[in-house]
Amino acid sequence: MSRLVVYGDIHGCRNALVKLRKKIKPKKKDIEICVGDIIKKGKDSIGILDYLQKHDIESVLGNHEEKIVKYLLHKKVGKKNPIYLNKEEKEIVKNLSKKNIKYLLNMPYFIKIKHIVVVHGGLQNHLSLNRLSKLEKSKIIKMRFLDINNHLKTYDKENKNSIYWSKLYNGNQGFVVYGHQWAKEIRADKHSLGIDTGCVYGNKLTAVVFKDFRKKSYKVFQVKCKH
Ligand SMILES: [Mn+2]
Image (cartoon, rainbow, N blue to C red; front, side, top):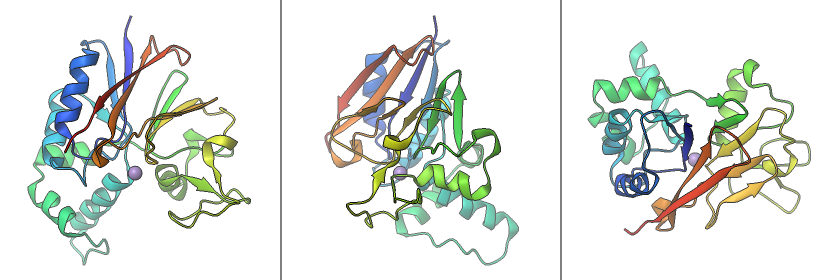
């Protein structure tokens, strides 16, 4: 029986991931996927990219990778780059190996295996995974709160009328496992599971393990993250 292992936002916390995998003991036939935001904020962004490739762990795009990918794609064209990188991002880009770049450029916006969808931000009922526009692809990476018209609220602009996307989601695209919005504990809704438990902020790194890809039978593994 193979397992699907999904890791929450790692943000360069390589040691936490190593510790967590020691608990899970992944086997060759298991599939391991990250919810994105594997890099930035933490100590070891390059180390994480190397580690994930070495252990055949895939990741969907997080907003932090998407920005770097956009920068790299513009760089290829050779014109003035419209993407502005901060100091940390410049340092990461400078140290990327060819393999790291290839890994980043190949990161998908979502991964769907049987009934389980892994995406960084979230989904909405009107979206169709097989027909996402460019704008919608970016949206599913950044989704958190929605306003009464079902539009995305900009980060930190939420108000009392804002609704978290998972409350409105009816499961029509599958059972969603996501990160992006961190909380002290995992967020379990009827059709989704939020697993960013703020590792890089000194809380926990979470993985959820599905036996035989069945959504009802998941087990949660966590490690404390000390900095
Ligand atoms: Mn994020």
